[in-house]
Length: 127
Image (tube, rainbow, N blue to C red; front, top):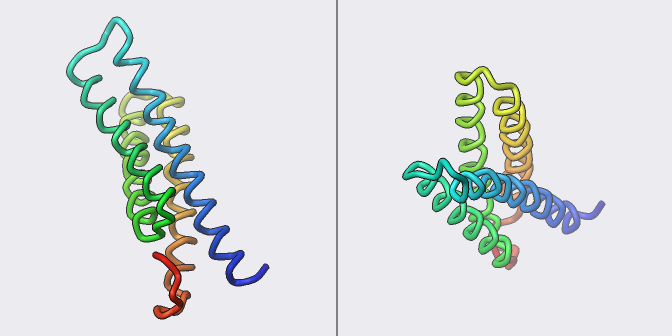
């Protein structure tokens, strides 16, 4: 695989995982908001998860490696904290799903950052 293919692969793998991560967060917050137990917490969760998804889609559309790396790291932390909530709740579904997303996103962003560090600074490519 050529160097440019490796760069594109690292970006797109991270982009797909981070977008799925953000979309799943929205997918869990919106039904809560629209359900019978909607409340202030559901409003905050839906607004934050929706905003994160929109920004992730924006940096992917702009092909910003630095922006994607920052958001992927943030989404890794979000899922890591959700893992902690699942552990405290003694709920395997709320533990292992977020844990898998946290690990997958963290691994993908680490490959993206490694690719960014290996890239020459004066390559003329966009972020």
